[in-house]
Amino acid sequence: MATISRMAAALLAAACMMLCAAGAFAADRAEAGADEPTLEAMIGQMVMVGFRGLMADPESAIGQDIRAGRVGGVILFDYDVALKSRTRNIDNPAQVLALTRGLQAMTPDTLLVAVDQEGGRVMRLKPRYGFPDSPSAELLGEAGDPEATRGVASAMGQTLATAGFNLDFAPVVDVNVNPANPVIGGLGRSFSGDPEVVAQQAGAFVQGLHEHGVLSCLKHFPGHGSSTGDTHVGLTDVTRTWTEAELIPYRRLIAAGLADMIMTAHIVNRKLDARLPASLSEKVITGLLRGELGFDGVVVSDDLQMGAIAKEYSPEKAAALAIHAGADIVLFGNNLNYDPGVARRVVAHLAKEVRAGRIDAQRIRRSYERIRRLKDSIAR
Image 1: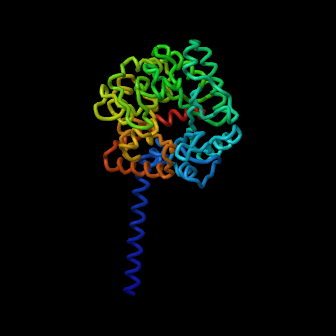
Image 2 (image 1 turned 135 degrees about the vertical axis):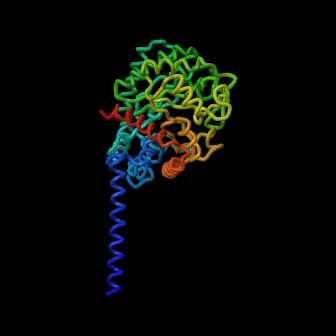
Image 3 (image 1 turned 120 degrees about the vertical axis):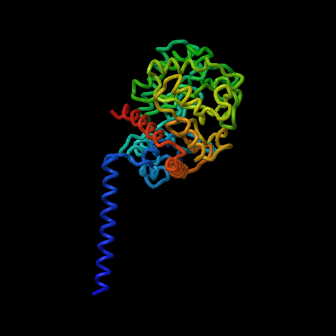
């Protein structure tokens, strides 16, 4: 009888513990709201990655990340830099549509499906794959006809929307301060050396994309047009060449409501931050872009696997610095360096940083809310 009594007492104690735990859990959910996203779910919306594959495979690394809510967006490429191969994500229009639809179907949420489709030399959807050609920003700027630019961007927007993309990492609003710039002027990616012309042309470009429900992204803040180096390779210092005139396109487009998203640059500008590159700088993102220029939309980092960042910081550290600085989405192209586990590690690391108090939980919530507003604008 004593043994039975002890067993009964143990069972009763266990039952009490379960009830107490259930009560505490219910109280937590009641306080937060039954539909309140978890910390990891909010952070997952802040991660965008590239991946390998021409088909949408739910069991692939990217498929698992999407289904688990570890990523809120993907970026597609036509060339795999690490493998030096043209087999990446893009082969023909029908294949791309099947891929983007398949990825989108893996989540009940809206997945941001992005691509770099600027026109000219930076186009992932190329004529060789069966897509229409488009002129460069340089040619459009030289023509000086905003309505023509809007028409070109509208046609581009139609191509993108038909292929299942809802975000174009364009237009470039870098001012062509240095025409020999190896990554901007030298590739014909800038509309003009006149910041007012850049603003006018970029505004028309954004409006053209909007005609087909495609989001735009202004890049590369606070200005990459005066650089002499390539941030894909390493840090590029524009301290001596950058001027505040390079902010004019951002000022104009933000004021006009034509800035859906803004991408930061990995450039070093000691006039703005003596220590950190712009993409990791609170002074640049929170102070200048949000404070002085008044932008409250989504800020996305340039690819954090580029040499300028990857040579100095791990993906986890870079992501934490970018988020702390004020970025809403951290981008890992997974092209210069293929790392299929990066989303899982970054989400876990950022959650750990928040729980340890090193990243303010409100920073995550503000970013989550900005991303939700952006996604809601294209889900309607």
